[in-house]
Structures are given as C-alpha cells and as structure tokens.
Length: 541
Ligand code: GLU
Picture 1 (spheres, rainbow, N blue to C red):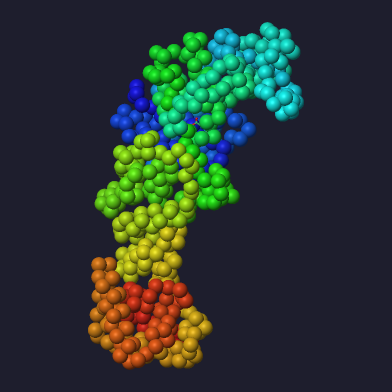
Picture 2: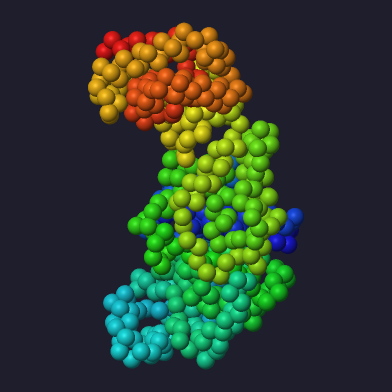
C-alpha cells in the first residue's frame, strides 16, 4: 500500500465547478510529486435529493479531458466494478469508492460510536429543531441537544441499535455527542495550528433517518478505511475542522479506530484547506454571477485543457520564478494530448509544494486565462492545428497551401479554437462585399473602384510582384508578405497616391469584409486566379 494517499470527493450534483477542478488539480499535483503517491477519486453522493447520474458522467469525463484521471477509484474506464445507476466503474482495493455503496461501513462505525456513548439518537422533529434555533438567537448560547433529548425521551431509545433505529417510524437522526468543555488543536499545513473552543459548538447529525451519512461521518469513516494521508479540500470545510478532529481523537481513544490501519502521525490525516477563488471583482467566492464557473463551458468554448490546467495551477500557487508555461514546442510535436497533460502536471508537480501555496484567496482573471490559451495555441504544431481546423470548419481537404495559410491566419489571431474562421473565412468562404463596404471614406465609390482596378492591374501584371504572390509556402509566407508590403508602399509613395484610398478597396475586395488581415497578407495567400476573380466580381458589381 502506498504511503502517500490523497483524494478528491466531489458530489455529482451539477457541473464541474472551476474551483473544484482547481482543488482536484492540487490534489493530483501532490500525488504526482511523490513517487509512491496515489490520488483516488471518491464520489460523494449521500445527499439523495440532489443526485444526477449525468452530472457524475460529465464530472468524471471533464476530469479525464483535463488529464485529471485518478490512480484509483471511480472512472469511465470500462474495467473494474460497474455502478449501474451512474454507468461508471470503480478500481482499487479499498472500494467501493461511491459513498451510496458504503452504507454498511457507515452503519458499522455509527454503531461503534453509539456503543461507546459517542453518539445518540435524536427524536426532535424539524419543527422542534427550528424552535430551538430561534431560542438560541435569544439566549446566544449553543443548544445542548443531548440534555434536551435525555430529558424528553426514553433513554433506551437514545442508544438503540442502528438497525432498529432506522426502522423506527419516528425517524430519529443520529447525533454526535461533543465534549463541550474541551479545546481542540487543529493543524492545517497552510494555516498552521488553531485552537478551537468546543464549548461554542453544538452536537451535530451524522446519520440521517434514511440511513445515509452526513459529510462528517462519511469523511471520518472513508478517509480512515481508505488510508488517506492528505486531505486537500476547500476552505468552506475549515469551520467543520474541529468537529472532524474531535471525532478522530474520540474514535482512537475509544478503540473504534486503530493506528494499525493507518500510519497517521496525529491520529488524523494531514489537511490543507484551500482559500476560495474570488470573482474578478469584489471579495466573494466566485459564483455564476462573477463569470463562468462551469468547466464544460470553457472546454466547449475551445479553451485548451493544457491552458486551463496551467492557469488553474497558478490560482493559489506561485513557484516564485518567472516561468509560467510548463510545456514546450517539442512536447506538442512529439506527444499526444493525454501525454502532454501528464507531462504538464508532472512538470508543475516538480516545483509544487504547500509552502508555495497562498494563504489568501486567488482572484480569477479571464484575461490571464486567455493569455495562457493564446500561448498554448502558439505551441500547437501546424499539422495538429490544420487537423483541428478541419474539424471545426468542416473542411474536406486541408492539403493545399492556400487552406493551410488561411488556417495559420486564425492561429495567429484567435484566443480560443471556437473562433476558428474569424480570419480564414475571408480566404475560404469569400462573399462579395457591397459597394458601401468597398468605398473608402474620403472618396466616391467610382473613384474607389478606379483605384482598385489600377492597383490590381499593376499587381497582376508585374512579374516581380507575381513571384511573391505565386511562390506560396508556409515557410516563406512572412517574408512574402513583408516583401509585398515594402514594394507596394514604395509604389504608392513614388506615385504620390493616398495609401488608404488604394489599400482599403483592395483589402475589402480580396477579403469580402471590412475587418480582415492586411492586403499584403491576403495577396500572399490567394492564388493569382482567385485575386483576379474577386477583383473582377467587385468591379462589375
Ligand atoms: N464533497 C465535498 C466537496 O466537494 C468533499 C470535501 C472533501 O474533499 O472532503 O466539497
């Protein structure tokens, strides 16, 4: 059994939240960092009202796309034990990894806690509990649930076996009994130690009347039985930390948990509570209102998994160097996407450690994510880029140079792959511009067309220029473009022509659009025949 085991336990209730993806990435980075590290994925599906099988598939699928597959636990890989409700699989020796399949474990430990006097059944109705919370507001002291339950109900009922209590028509809930006169020290690798005063805490439910555990019980039982050594979870769990620490300590003290099962140093796993990710403005945890938090949307919009991972790594971690991009051109030329993601995570993990994690919240910044995406697009090999373009634009053929150069126009311009076509369309899907579009603002349409004719005649009958136009290749495209620019500008100047009144009609005629790449770029991509054809159509319009 590996000595370093960490895990994520997302709930399949909706989409993969950007913040959850960041927590899972950090978890995986820790496991990747250690040679014997294991990162396992557990599905936390004990809130039966909010279950959604599609959400589980989508969540695990998104994690796979991002290179965040676990070493053990739930996955879409068709081996291991299948869960028919979700249609997902489980692998590993310490399963099941889906909490709804683990009820017998929770009941076994709940029973041990009852036997040792650490837990008791509460018969309070929701209305009674509500009333108690109202009273609490006026007395400003925590409610002593145990005292109320003992006074009000037959003591034998309070310690019924789990099996019998779950059959009880009065539907009791199992509460954890806190030693309220204690102080408990909680150690977090990021925040250091905090002493919590339990006199301010109330007893809390650990098992619902339907037999499903609450997070507190599931956390204790699962992370013990699955031998977790490091828990990385969101800051939202920090207030519950003293509850968990106390439960671990009590259970060890009463022999419910044994140090022979885990090699924990302080009778509990180590913890890192990650600060929230804030929205672009304000000081609140990022939510739908502050931008997009659904990972699927980023993938659909054409953000590259490599860019997303690299960006997320920096949300709360700083290596303290100038380095930001953790892959190289070589990786894009030699590895497929799965291999690249594995390498990216490995490369980051080499520099990743909790001392470099930030104690304060990270702020989401879409412009920075966009920057990462553009940087990663630059790294994609032309061959791979053409293949992506083929799919995105529904092209049949990507072999000819004009198509390839058109796709490179997009590569230099787009932020995400959903913008494919923004520049290449003017080469691949030309449509005739209107006269209004051809007209240069300071002159008439007749004059604009006259200028278009003059400059295109000169271009198409000039052997020197045609050599730039005809000798198309990916390698000499930049040079061709710049040669055309130099020569054309020299001609305009020598003939004392107004630049805009010639280049505007030419550019709009060739691109079919008011906004497009430069006329020099268009001329060095289009064939001579295509140039003549487009100009002719515009002049005859
Ligand atoms: N389901 C919990 C969450 O997503 C798990 C927390 C944990 O990692 O223990 O916040």
